[in-house]
Image (cartoon, rainbow, N blue to C red):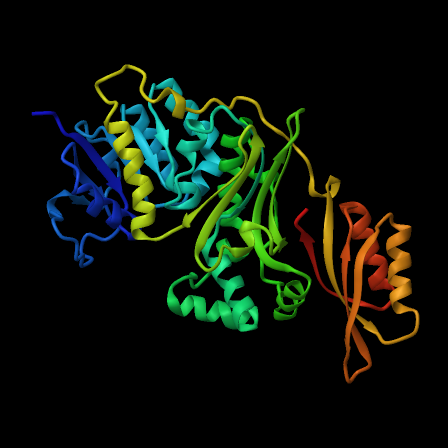
Length: 422
């Protein structure tokens, strides 16, 4: 009888539970130890033997019988030390920890290489969407130079509901929290941290150069208004939180996370609610979009279990398993600061309804090398102010920021400035 590969889990929350339940269907693996925070918490999981539970995660990483450790608890501490210890104890790693990979991935992959162990992390980028393994294998013959992705289900849910209901950000956030789509403290999602962690690792893998999380421009969705959603629709766009990356032939990388007006002709404009999607562009594939559930018990478990089984199938058959899945990124990308980029812009302005206001705005833009694609005055309020919407042609970020200051100095209020998909 074939020897079963022994698995240790760190974390038995939503994802951990899904992983345990899914692994029960496979005869070649066996979960022999699970670290949990609270041993006394009631758990309705069929087939769970409470004797394999421990509240000391070091029992998992130090257990000599375990071949693969799946770290599913998240965060930096103690996850970093636990994974490092497990690797040094000869164990392969599967993780869904996007923050840890973004901040400490370089060190952990180096330790794994030194100890001839593998770290797989399919679930850390886009939940249940098969992404990392296809990029490393099926798409390995492509030179991918552009990524545009929706990588956070919470923000996509909020923006979709704002779009459909015409509701405010605050109202939709409250609803999302009540439904469990948003945390009580939603900062990690709505301020773009989660998406930034994910695009850091995704861009590193895709571009073949390390992308430092500290150099990624990040902007959340908290300033998006219902009026912006309506204006975008009227102009042929949807507003999405986009994690994007581009790299040129010299290794200069522009990686960022921010709201974006996405053309309704784009696939990403129609990715709604908690669904995630990743669009990759390069040669010879052209463009390809992968979409699916970006979170949840079983979608994420699907990716974790896939990684576990990939490693399990190789153990004992080679002294150097899964070579294509190992880290090969030794050079840092030269990161381009957002101030050095060129973009199209949507600007919402509240101005006094005086003669020549639109002309002045146009003049300020022209003097800062900014051409306007459209400028529309929508309405005049009771306080004699007018709502003006501007879409620019491609302009330099520095010029745009300077123009914004001058428009405000002229007595106008800038309600929103959102970059537009090029």
